[in-house]
Structures are given as structure tokens and as C-alpha cells.
Image 1: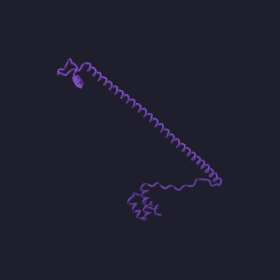
Image 2: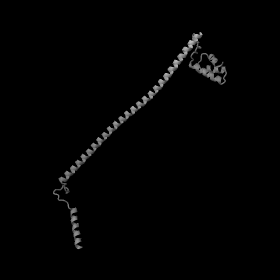
Image 3: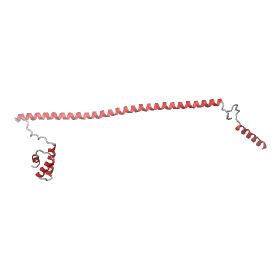
Image 4: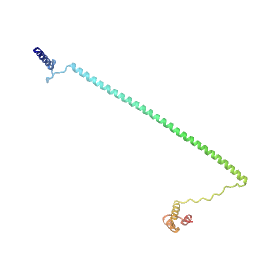
Length: 193
């Protein structure tokens, strides 16, 4: 037991000695601190260079990946735009084609109706000639002269006042005071009959 305790103490002292023992340094800085060996400095320098090279490689790879993704997205967007434009053109062509077909059918119906009307007019003219009724077409009544804005407004006011029960004299007075009319009496003759 004493031997074991002595052995443990000896091992502890040896471990303690190893833990706090520094390797022999032949040179020291002016402040008394030991210099790193050139081998350790070289390894640290190599590690820094390797780290920088790895960082550059990672950055370059990220840039290349981003450019590749951007190019792929631009290609997909252009392809989608073309597909949408093609689909829209096809739909427009279908609608226009359908409208054109319907218009053609309606035009054919109108042409048939015109042909029927021409045939009926020809038959009617022939029948009238056989009966001896032919001649010039009946005269249409003469067209009314075109009214000015004040005359149209005056006629509308006079008609409204007459419908509401106003006497002719009251309507005439109102029209003379509020509108610039040449012939109020003639206008009132068309309303008060």
C-alpha cells in the first residue's frame, strides 16, 4: 500500500513536471518572451494561405452558381413568355376565326334575303306593269326645315308647359323672355292645336 502511494506520488510529480515544462528556447525577444520557431510560423502561414485559397474558391464557386442560376431563370422566363404569347395568338386566332365564320354566315343570310327581295320587287313591278299601274313612285311629303338649338329648346319647353296646363299666352311670354326666337307664334302653333 505504501509502495502504491509512493508510485502515485512519483507519477503525479512527473506529470506535474511535464505539464509545466517548456521546450528549450534558444532565442528570446527583447521583452523576455520566447520566439516561435520558424517551422511553426511556416505552418501557420501555410494554413492562412490555404484558408484564403479555400475562401476564394468558395466565393468563385458561389459566383459561378449564381450566374448559372440567373442564366437558367432568364432562359425559363423567355421560354414561358414565348409559350404564353403563342397560346394568346392561338386563342385570338380561334376567336377571330369563329367571329369571321359567324359574320360570313350572316352575310350569306343577308345576301339570300336581298335576292328574295329583288325577286319579289321584280315580280311586283311585273304585276304592276301588267295591271297598267306602273309609273313614278309616290311623292314623299316635304321635309321639315331644320330647327336651331333655341327653336328645339323652345318647342320642348312649350310642349312641357302645355302638358302641365299652361295657357298659350303664358308659354309665349316665357319663351320671349328666356329664348332668342324669331317666330314664337309659329312655334306655338305646332304645340297648341
